[in-house]
Image 1: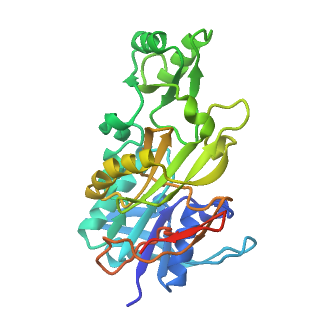
Image 2 (image 1 turned 30 degrees about the vertical axis):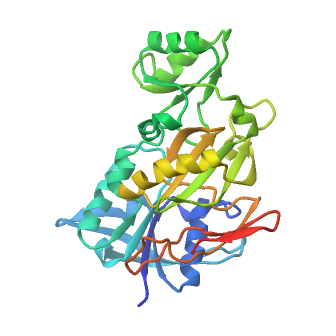
Length: 330
């Protein structure tokens, strides 16, 4: 039986061919001869209680000059698909929220959505990590500027960041004698109207902000350490960091063992953990990346262990390390 796969993503014409993780998943689907239906959140709608979408049949190719083709639009019931990959990038705005509600309705009508729409709403990528305080750094979540100032005064060297950012955007390091504490707090909190996160600065960032991928609760044995550019405190590749593949440490595995079962229970089949040193800083669930980077060569995988219904996992599990070593996830 041919699997009917839907993918909700950002406009495919804006995809960065050399590193896009969603594209890697779609290549894996194409190699299995799955039928792929492409849509954006703007295409989703509900009519007569039925979750529906305008979709285009999608074909993908490993050719940077011609990596996709789209057919004419057709209108379908989302419940007629077998599985939908929700791969829309943040920001998590109202339109993203509405899309998760439509996809949750579609789940009741027969389609499997990955990751779970309900959990996408419930699991803010920074706040979700706080459910594992034994794994993370000292932190504070507040919009009270006096409280945030006190945290800075107590710990001296801290990171301040918004709860809805991505790619390292609007992340500030405040050192003990920083002259811009006031203006940074005013900007991030919108003069006390917006809740933000403060964390103690982790000097281990110099060795990389590690992205650890979980597939159905199990860690991929290698992570991508994102090394900050000179003069930067952020390792995000979007902020100029460089990637280095490395094996998971014992601490990385302990963190994955804490988070993995909870993620699986919540229907979060593909998750990206951000770990600095031995500290969990974020749990990425909306559209995790780092499947494809210059230091990793990826091939399609076989099914993740718990995909017991017909759609196997599209996630990367057969990874070749840049030193020639490799592993395969059975």
